[in-house]
Image (cartoon, rainbow, N blue to C red):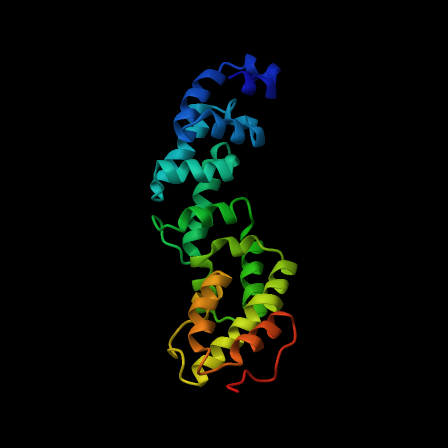
Length: 233
């Protein structure tokens, strides 16, 4: 409580402080989490509890978020507790429009990614993803549904990812499929999102004998030295 008071002692004269603290402590579970959220949005403690905060929490519940998901979401985006409830609903509807169903494990992450971002900017991000990675509508939908935080990435970050990680992996997948070493129906995105360690274990190491040059060719590609073709010998 003392640390909350130190943030803005003059505002503790507001009558809403005590009930807001009690209610929000139930949301965030611990004082540490509450303090972290309040540091970024002090209006959590001064907004009208009945007309603002509770309706926003209720709206999140309507879209399938449980107590744990709401706590994590509001810790990442504390302004969702104090904005207009229609803004909360519009954000949730936007997430559904991206192909992420309410109640799914990624719904919270997507809400966090698109909160307070205009529909125009989101649409522009989607188009940029399609152009950068040459994805179809279906592929970009899969990408966003599995990793909605991609909508937060800058164009520069996406370009670096394309050059240093995604393009080399796409060449590996193309090589493996062309030579009958990988299921032709394996979607590219599932290959792109795994960690480097998992990628090596699944797509490089098992083919050391069949394609001994695959590992060095991939290493060169990651350095920007893209070979014209991955080689068997």
